[in-house]
Image (cartoon, rainbow over all chains, first blue to last red; front, top):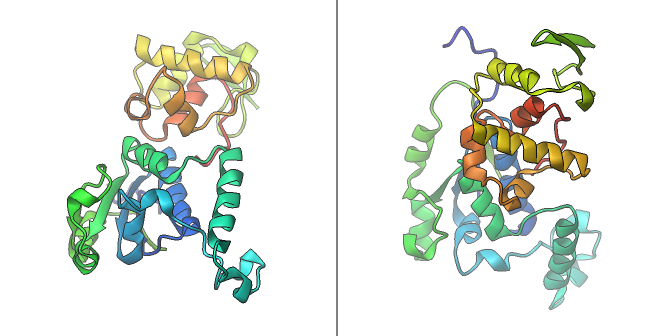
Length: 161
Length: 102
């Protein structure tokens, strides 16, 4: 086994710690893209990243308009009421044009593609979330140690978003 | 470049995808499948036929489109063509590898 290994990526372990739309999509596209190449993929949702798998919140994620220089919007303006919603609806329209699924559909695609979704135990406790509050495709609530164990083996790469 | 597949000389690109669908036939598809360790069943061929139809209609293929196809769902697609289903199936189908990320 070891001798056949030539440095190829065999498994992507992605940690998602934020729930701004652009970060959630980055994690999802990377996980899905891995599966499309025959690479295994798992996502560990921690801290605010949990919102991306919280049944009541996942449809309402926003783009960050403050502290995001690439939005080319003055910070003060970005902080105005309704600004995030406006930027988010604009981004969603653009994404639909390039055939990008919404968050719920994307989660369905990931699970059907064999991506394992994990919720961080510590963050779940902190936010007082229960397993049944989360999207049904989540495998389990696990610890950091469990997640590392999942990633053991040759050719595993970890990515923090 | 040229490659002999199932006794027939065909044009392929550097990744082994046929560059001219007119040169494709089922025996060629079968041999490409064998190289990928896939034993073709009637179910596999149904999916291949769908991909070829989509290609002829100039529809850009993606995993999402497969999921909406009503021909095969994503889970079965991965089960039929493990190790990168869209990549492997299009190669067997004799059509270009989709450039999609989703």
